Picture 1 (cartoon, rainbow, N blue to C red):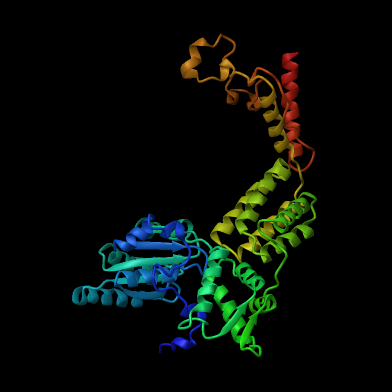
Picture 2: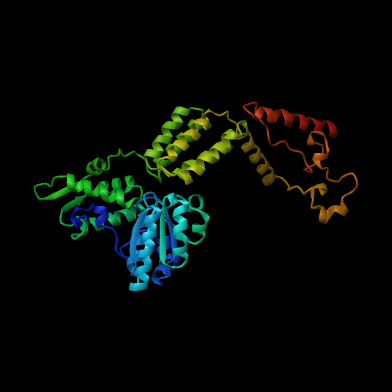
Amino acid sequence: MTQPKHMKPLAARMRPRTLEEFVGQAHILAQDKLLYRLILADKITSLIFFGPPGVGKTTLASIIAEKTKSCFTRVNAVSSSVGELRGIIDLAKYRIENESRRTILFIDELHRFNKAQQDVLMPSIEDGILQFVGATVHNPLFSINAPLLSRSHVFEFVTLTPEEILRIIDHAIQDSSRGLGRYKIHMEPEALKVIAHVSEGDARRALNIVEVGVLSTPPGQDDVILFTKTVAEESSQKKILNYDHDEDGHYDTISAFIKSLRGSDVDAALYWLAKMIEAGEEARFIARRLLIFASEDIGNADPHAIMLAHSAAYAVEYVGLPEARINLSQAVCYLACAPKSNASYQALCRAQRDLQTQRVDEVPLSLRNKHKYGREIPKGQEYKYNHLYPDTFVVQDFRLRHSEYYQPTERGYEKHIKERLDQWRKRKFEKKS
């Protein structure tokens, strides 16, 4: 049974009905962009939308169906069955043959679409019986099977900006037919900031906060509902942290996070990680900083550190928040407790300083491209192929000048590297002397 319009949540009532009402995603919906042109030209075949929740993936699919005068059928990849899909295909065939009307099949949670479902659907997509639109929060390059991916145009949706969220809220407050226009609402600027922040670019979440706040706040004597910052915080059920993403709160916190990792204080590092996650910091940003830290501050003292940091970064892309916070936590615990060395980073800095302050070395003749310079290399100066010598080591010049940039520490695995390197450097010195 269809739910009465006035009983639907505000977010459902305010769902955009046309491209003109749609807010956000200008990078794919501007008039000169491919998706916009495909919609206007009615040339939709197969589309995959991926991105975070509440940014318009389902809404845009519905708008496309309306714009192209197509029937809109929505299913969920988890709950739909092969039998249900066959019924949708049969109905789509009937519409084409008897009504000259096409069907857009929208599949939510596309990453859960199994092979049996795809096998049933693929011929109908290729024959044009169905126009297909799939939505997923995961990157389709990792989560969607290649046959379906190769037949689709893929478009990435991004989180809405605070300005876009505020436009959506303002429209909902002003609209008297679908929105909250029948109420007298005074929305304080600080309340709007809170909503724009905690909604994290999710329009559905922002409208839910507004609706809860308006309906739960009694009007004053003048019948005006005063929507304050406190109302916004209570309606969102989330504590607002002092964390400005572009100013001191952001930079101070990430500084404390990195310094805690460097200082091997795992508990402090976890605290600052928790603060960033709770404040809505971008998970990719945290993962990137862990990758940098693994090489800059741990390096070869624990070569596994960079691999674990990379795995956490991959998990952020593949799993996404909130679950990826678990992967980030594992990486933070490991990196904080790992032996530390910045020797490899310092080695590069020393080499760069030489390049900037000294004459640039020429490449020794023995190392040059043999196809070009082979006949010019004097006898006795030929390149020596290391694998022909014991321990794959032989003394030869790889630079015309000698410098020792890398100075390994005695910590962790780097101690073993230092032992080998000291032996090689000693043999070089003895050979030259």
